[in-house]
Length: 219
Ligand code: DX5
Ligand code: ZN
Image 1 (cartoon, rainbow, N blue to C red):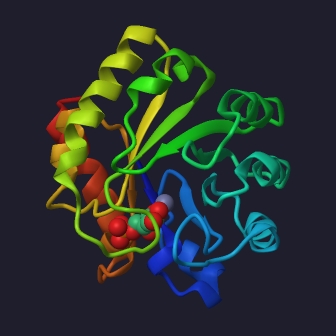
Image 2 (image 1 turned 90 degrees about the vertical axis):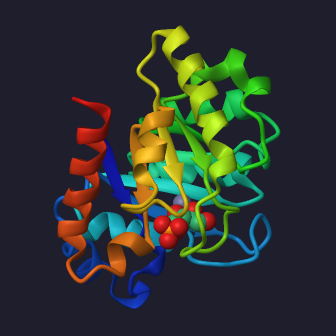
């Protein structure tokens, strides 16, 4: 059970300090947006390189960009530990996943809420993580979409059948009120943005979410 706080709702002008507020996090989730794949813009490679220099924490990149086939490998080269591209934006997801792994990063593939997992069942072994969006990507603080839960269950079945250690990450609206539904459906890696950074004590919230997930799953 891993908690990877999204800094999207943190103070973006003081990111090193904000990352310092969540020492218990397993990874730091960085949302890169290009205002084309999603109607919002955050930051790109120079910012990630700067964040890389400022922290030893593992960096979990979530690329919400159209040109992932061309641009994603540079994030692996910049020292991101995990790089997730969106399958809706990739023309060659197998080639891209292999390239990310070759560069030493974990390869993640993200799906919008309405994108089915089944067309990608045969390539799941190319991945280290599947990210299932539980809101439409683009903004923090949105309501959790329960309609994604059956897809989480189906993804867990595919991963179990593969026998591989592929993480299932949920992103969007994850909070103490929704994390147990995600655990029950089979997720093991949880992005939480507003739930963590709107909390009075963000690090206590990270630990509370992880404890809640561990208790719910029974180990
Ligand atoms: C949304 C981003 C998320 C977002 C999550 O498009 O991918 O990582 O920051 O924020 P919350 O937890 O507030 O939904
Ligand atoms: Zn994200």
